[in-house]
Image (cartoon, helix red, strand yellow):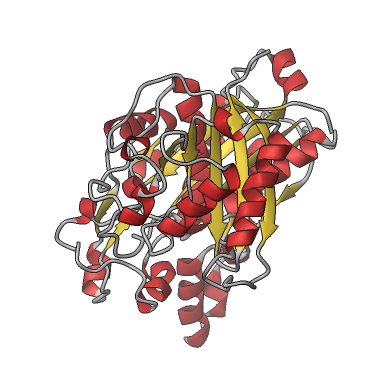
Length: 424
């Protein structure tokens, strides 16, 4: 378990930027990807805004054949393919028909639910006694592991190829699962990431729970307000993020670019006890996850330059900051800088952990800490714990060595990964 693990490729399809360069620029400029969604307005959702990647038709043809596009009806597969294929190319690995099966390469690519629109299409056809019109791709588009299967049709990985699903922790968990497999010597590299679908059939349940903001339909970019006193619920989002997680020795042999090192991390659950539930975290579980991640990574709390938190713009934001402070035993000016990507993208649900991990690694590789828009009225409970300048409203350009990325999901599940600047 002493093998060092690094990130050698990344790809992203985020609401505020598709492709690594566009996404990095959006982070630095504080560009929001949250917009009014006409379909939500038509269906009379209370919350009619969301974060949704913009994918032009010509871009689709770079990742899918005309035959595949003819029956494709899954936004999650679209986002996952774009981010995953981009990450593999970015790592300088072979792709397409010329790639031969590589028994040392694998895929762990998660999702929450896949092919909802394809399901809906199928239900209408079946109820209309037109089962024969379902087509040959209905099953692969609606099974959860369809995303890893689609990706592997391009990548030819012969190692473990699978899909994980753990609510909002899915993407972060995938990276840690990949790192564990590589450390144990069972694989040399794994494409790790996650995707989340978009649309009313994904977001409707959250709108019904009344946990989405409804007062910003005429001002979408102001709607997602993590750590703000005026936060009124999370804005739903979608997309995908992908990282190539690789054994250091393999990366050096290939002469691959190294974005960052995965020092360690931890995954656990609060057990839905001690105020933990289907929708709320057990603070003891969160604290244990943070402490164990720090221990596994071999860093001291004061060595963290930044925390990219889960922080969703709900009543639990202050609780999360308090948990970080208690777990790290840091507060005030000693507390690391902290940010939430959700101010710029909304909450991308099962894709959140992977997209936010890409953002975390970019901060290390390009030396900046992106700002939290809409946080000008910082919640007073948070301000009691951390100094105001530790919650930047605009991007700070400075050397960044260590970043903690956290995801805490429905079902009281937790994941924290520690990324570091690579030093040979």
